[in-house]
Amino acid sequence: MNIENSVRKIFAQLKQVKDPEIPVLNVVEMGIVREVNFVDDKVEISITPTYSGCPAMKAIEDEIKKTLQAEGYSNIIINKIYSPPWTTEWITEEAKKKLKEYGIAPPEGIAEDDFLKDAIAKPVECPYCNSRQTQLTSQFGSTACKSLWVCQSCGQPFEHFKYI
Image 1 (cartoon, rainbow, N blue to C red):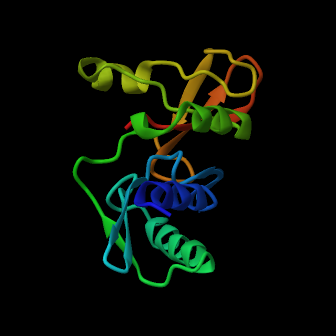
Image 2: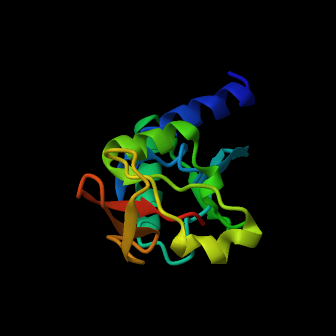
Image 3: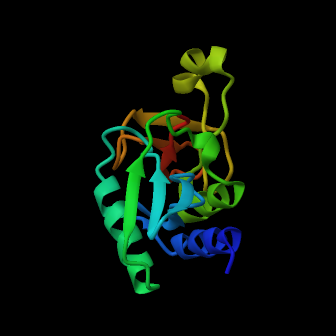
């Protein structure tokens, strides 16, 4: 098997590794897995944390190793890459759909110059009824990357994955 096929195979296997904080998403569609390389007899996986203090990274690393070991890979190196920093722009469109179906409003792109002005004031679309009649209730949800909102139309509380 050539290197390109081997890399594709590993990326396919890594799609089995779920984000422990959002179990409907895998680490590939989240944009956490950046690169797969073969160096001598080693498989090197480069990952970028969603933010530098993300508590899920150790669990993700362990699950990556476990998944690849189950496929017969024994010499696995995981490198954390902090530059460029992870951004929600790396989340695939399919993953954003999964977030919404799971009840979490996906991140919405905001132009850089408008970020500070709009990040708090801009209403987020409710993942349940699609209304923008929503209100921020807390800057932080179950994790630092999510905020808490409530929909004024359907009354449903929900989390929003912040645009980073």
